[in-house]
Image 1 (cartoon, rainbow, N blue to C red):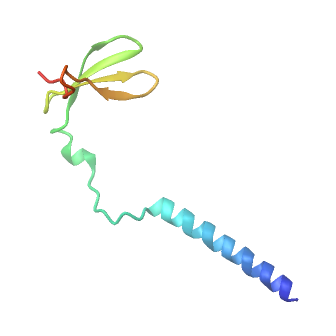
Image 2 (tube, rainbow, N blue to C red; image 1 turned 180 degrees about the horizontal axis):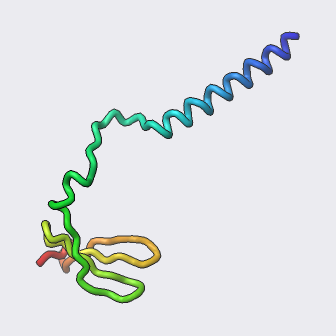
Length: 88
């Protein structure tokens, strides 16, 4: 009988662990008051400068920084010869 009780207790602990893991994943646990990016959308406009089907160049109109983006994923900042972000 005690072995059955241990097994039930172990199963219950596993279920509780999974429940809390899912709850934390869905709700987050940062405690940071997050705001919507849509509130700041007019400030952060990015324009497409040019490119082809694989690589596209973008420019942040607020900061003037240029970016390269690949079609299959990945974005990187373009840098000048000193390693600083390339700007106008």
